[in-house]
Image 1 (cartoon, one colour):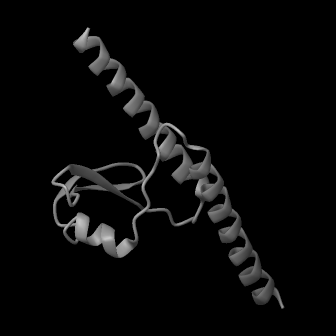
Image 2: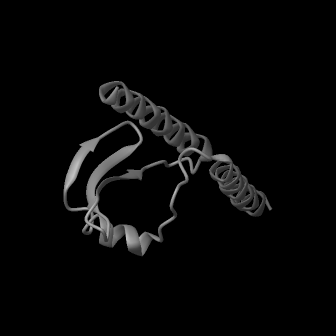
Length: 109
């Protein structure tokens, strides 16, 4: 009985995390995130061979989109399956993008 309750709680908790992430992504107007299937990410990051760095939440790999644009692909590692860490990571990236756009505008004017 305890095992079933524990398993049920873990599945429910994981579903809550997924719902939290989905709601967050729908609210993101400035980033306009593009969704990729895991199989597409493997192709974009060339099987995660070219590691650029390592952070607190996971590794960053060099990737290339179909049009030849280079991108960074971050593989989040989270043993807790917690959507909050993902949301924090995306929020941080969004702030960095806004700062980079601000710097670009300053250099143009």
